[in-house]
Image (cartoon, rainbow, N blue to C red; front, side, top):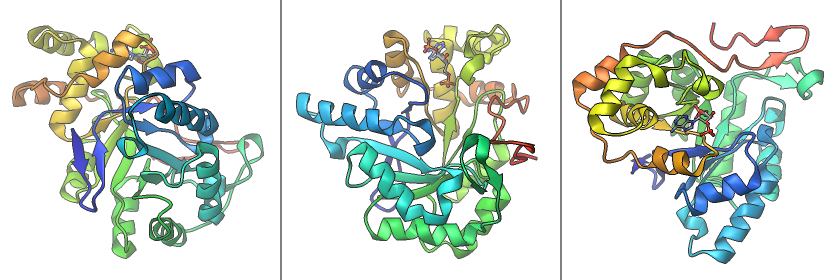
Length: 293
Ligand code: A2P
């Protein structure tokens, strides 16, 4: 199942988050898991490996470039030259174009990691560079990540090419209901990262052990993770679950036939605690950028 972005672009609603995963796992996700929406970023330092995998997959299987939906992102210190950043990503990926290019964070810095410093670079000077990437056919669509309502609403006042998606952290403990509902009205797809709670997924206090979710999963004879991913689909957001386990990898994409009732969707949404697992970008001598404050 896919979101129709209205410009000929269809975004598969379950994608695969690639951060920190080894090559064999990533290749298995495409070949055996059936994932076609692959989410990377220049920051993840795995674009070259993904490029190698894609070349192998295209040579060894019947999967073609057009079957894949490849997403990458411009990092915070690359935004003075977005064309240079995307061309470097494409060279690492070995691709002529990506399907979706995202501004990774609404944070502007110069330098990388321990050497980075905040700079002032307005979004209205970044977005036209993003639009130019569509015009040059280096990406089929553009979007943002970690944007709040005001940033995105403001961007819509001058965007000539609209963002098709905003990739944000979403889970039963971080529902961001107002933002999700508004984005749906604007036909901007919310894409969830850490939909299973990220690093906290294996901890006792994670929502995968929550009584409400366990009961709903039991009723539908699915796993708690599948129930959570089906909840995302029912409320209209895409998800990027990450698993290195072959069985869970397959289960996490096998969720399209799970139909939760409105009561079940509401019961999961009520678990919201406004709990984030990803605390934005750390800037030395400054702490975390206050993106969400
Ligand atoms: P594993 O790789 O052993 O499956 P997120 O997608 O929110 O980033 O969460 C990733 C974490 O969730 C990983 O630790 C992953 O572990 C775990 N995970 C992924 N799929 C499932 C599942 N179906 N059930 C339980 N835990 C899962």
